[in-house]
Every structure is written in C-alpha cells, then in structure tokens.
Amino acid sequence: MLEVANLHVRYGNIEALHGVSFQVKEGEVVALLGANGAGKSTTLLSIMRLVPPEGPVVTQGAIRFNGKDLLPVPAHAVVAQCGIGLVPEGRHIFGNLSVLENLKLATYARKDADQIERDYARVFSLFPRLADRKHQRGDTLSGGEQQMLAMGRAFMSGVRFILLDEPSMGLAPLLMQELFRVLKELNEAGTTILLVEQNAHLALKYAHRAYVMETGRIVLEGNAQELAEDADMKRAYLG
Amino acid sequence: MNIDTLVQNLLNALQWGSFYALIALGYTLVYGVLLLINFAHGDIFMVGAYIGFFLATFLLGQYALALPFSLPPHVIFLVTLLLTMILTAFAGVTLERVAYRPLRRKGVNRLYVVITALMCGLILENGNLALLGANRRNFPQLLDNTVYSLGGVTFSDVKLLVIFATIAVFLLLETIVRKTKLGMAMRAISYDRMAVPLMGIPVDTVIVFTFALGSSMAALAGVLFATAYPVLEPYMGALVGWKAFIAAVIGGIGEIRGAFAGGFLLGFVEIFVAAFFPSTLRDLIAFSILLVFLSIKPTGIFGVARATKI
Image 1 (spheres, rainbow over the protein chains, first blue to last red):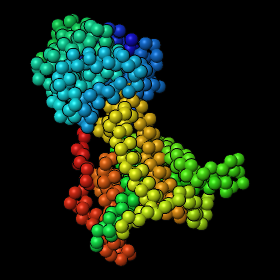
Image 2 (cartoon, each protein chain N blue to C red):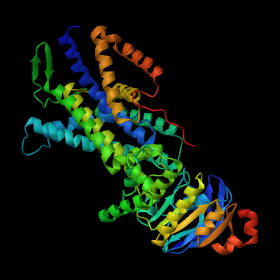
Image 3 (cartoon, rainbow over the protein chains, first blue to last red):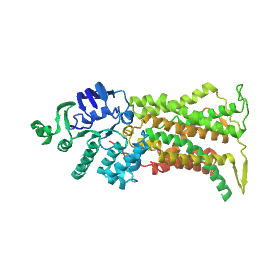
Image 4 (cartoon, each protein chain N blue to C red):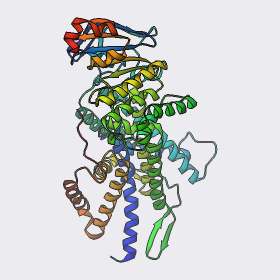
C-alpha cells in the first residue's frame, strides 16, 4: 500500500532523514518507534506532503502509495484523493470551532452524503464523549477529548489509511488503553494504520509490525511480538 | 443639539460609517486568514470605483462602442454594481496571485509581505494616474436620489441604500462564515494553518475566496461611495483605506463584527466631532479619541489577544 524508499529530507540546511525505507501493507498496523528526534514525525509529515514552514523538503528517494508517486501531490490531495489522513502530534484541532464544526470541516472534499451521515454516527459511537460535547468549542475540551476529536476528524475525512503521531502523549493510562482499543476496532473494520509512538510497550501490543528509528535512519525492523522480546530492543527502548 | 440634529447626525454617521465598515471588512478577512495586513486594499476600493465608473458610462452609451439598446438608469446601476463586484474580485485575486502568493511560497517573514502590499497600493494609485491621467471624473448619476424630509431630518434614498446594503452584507458574511464549509475553513485557518490541508482543504482556494470576498465588498463600497459623492480621483482610496484599516483595528482585526463595529464607531466619531468643532479639526480630534481608546483596549472592541502558539 505505502512504500517509502531511500527517503532523504531536510529542514533548511539540516538533513533530518538519511535514507529511510519501509512499507505498510493494506490492513496492517505498523508502529514507527524511536527516541525524540529520531525522525518519526518528519517521516509522517513527508508522507502527507506538508511543505515548509510546517514540513520538510524531500531531496532524494520516493514515496509511493498504491504504486502512485506521492511527491508531486499537494497535501490536501493526499487526503482527499489518495485517502491518507494524519492525526498530528499535539492534535491541532480547531479550538475556535465547535466539535461538530471540526468534524464537518473534515468532510470538505467528500461528496458521499449518505456515507458521511453513517460516519458521524460511527464517530459518536466510538467516542460518546464527543457526542456530549458536540456544540462546545474545541479549546474547551480536555487533552484526551481533543485527541478523540483529532482521530474523529481524520475518520470523517473518509481516509482508509491513518497516520497517527504520538496519540498517547499526555494522556492518562486508562484513556490511552481506550484510545488503542478504538484504533484496533478501526483497523479490524479495514483501516490501515501507521503509528508513531514513544510508548513502545503499548505500540507493540497493538501493532503487527514495527520499525525502530534512530537519528534519521531505520535501525531495526520486525514483527511486533518478536521485537517486544528482542533483547537489544528491550535494553534500548522498553526498559 | 436638539433631537432633529441628533437624528440627522446619527443618520449621516451610519452612512459614513458604512463605507468604512465595508472596506474594513476586506482588511479583517485577509488578516483573519493570512495574518497579513493588505495595505493595498484601500486602493482596491479605488479600483472598484473606477471599474464602476467605466461600466456605468459604457452602459449609458457614452463611448463609440455601445449597447444596441438603452437600459433604464436603475437597471444600469444594478448591473454596474454586480459586474464591478465581480471584476474587482478578480483584481483582488490577481493581486494575491502576483504579489503575495510567490512570497508565501518562499515562506518569507510576513513583514516583507506587508511592505509588498504597501508597494502594490502605490502601484495601483500611480498606475491609474499614468493610465487615466490626473483628471477627476464624475460618476454618472444613476439613481434619482430623492430627498425626503421627516420633521427636521432629511435623508435621501442613496443614504438609506448604503446603510441597508451594509447591514445586508453583515448578515450575509456572518452566515457564510458560520454556516458554509468554506467559511468554517476561513475561521479554521486563522486558528491553525497546518491542520487545514489535513482536512482535504486546499489552503489556496480558501485564500482566493477570502480575497474575492473582501475585494467585492470594497467594490460595493466604491460604487456606493461614488453614487453618494460622485468625484473620482486616483488617490481616493488612500486616506479612506487608512481610516478603514484603523476602523478594523478598533473593532478587533480578524473579527467580522469588529469591522462593522469599528467602521460605524469611526463614522460616528468623525460626524459628531465635525458637528461640534470646525471641520479642519475633525481628523485630529477623531483619531486622538481612537488613540486613547486603543491604549485602553489594544485588541479592539471584539478582539482577543492571540496566544502565541509554539
């Protein structure tokens, strides 16, 4: 489904990725692990085709989605035409819009009115808290609720492949488990997921496969269960 | 000041403030979306008035090339108004395309874009001067401009038209921004630019729409202004533009209702100062009052201090 090959990107004069290659197949949950500054978020921003000032510049390599070259595609078309969505780090919900308006905005490019109605119902059943807070402004939500809204928004944009950047950050453990249960449910319903996480334990529990990044390179890859038991991995990331 | 004079001045202030409000709208919309003060906007108002002038005189058959039939003046007014709004919207969008978008693509500091805007304003003024000469032009009278008297208060239908058009524009824009997806996207951009494309929304479309909206409102102001005060000259947008910008800031820049509140407030202050003091002191006193107002509430009437996002 997604194929990243020998990806080099830079922010200004600083190269942030030095030849990253990986794949995500349809229906998988793939985790991208690693310490702060390893290049995980940069990888996601590159895939989404976000350009400066928000994103990096790709200098070499390829990003292909179902065989199509993503590099010339603008960010909004990556979402609307290719069906790839990003739940960004720090949520980036629209605090000056209501919860419902946030969700509605995500349907901007969609034409399938009937499916949109079903998707609203789905989002509100996955996250009943959002239904309760429908008419509240986004910035009045708690951190967990904002994360739910950011995920709900990605879902409402009608994408089949969701990239998540640190969804568990700043969440209470209970909420974290809840969020991952929802991710699993989405995945079982056919959504492919690429997950960036610092909480490697949690990520490996839900992922099928994982890649480990270090300073702009992939240093380890494998099936999630094997990685969870890998001695190097344990020493470096699982503690 | 007796009650008649008071009502008369209120009416005058509403009309005068309407022009400021309609122009202030363009500043505030663009600022809300791009955090850019489009200093060329006052000159877009001038461009609107001139486009209106040429359309109206063309429709009246004052050129060698004319329509094969003649239209009644109020129809000409309506056609002129609508076509001017459309054409001026194109002018505003072209300005964005040619001057601002290349800078945005390079990701330069907003300061440079503001300077570019100032220069574009000068280019529009002097381009007009070079192209059309320094002659003032008289906007043709298309509406009867009947003057009514009620007690000691006189008002014309042009005055009422200006005020009602402005109120209608306010309601229309509030609806667009609250209810349509494009309007929501405009509000969303002002809060978080990065997340907008993630919703599948092309940011450039939203920006073009914003410029088209603001410019067409400036065109509306231009044609109405020319109908009420029918003398056009290349620099007519400069001072009015500055004042409308001040009105937008007073109202709280980035807020649509702020543009209207600020526009009307400026209209009231100017008219009432002129009612009590010699008119040469009008701007001095009016802007001193606004200076005091801003020093007390720097974010304007409806503005909220923006938290700097990291």
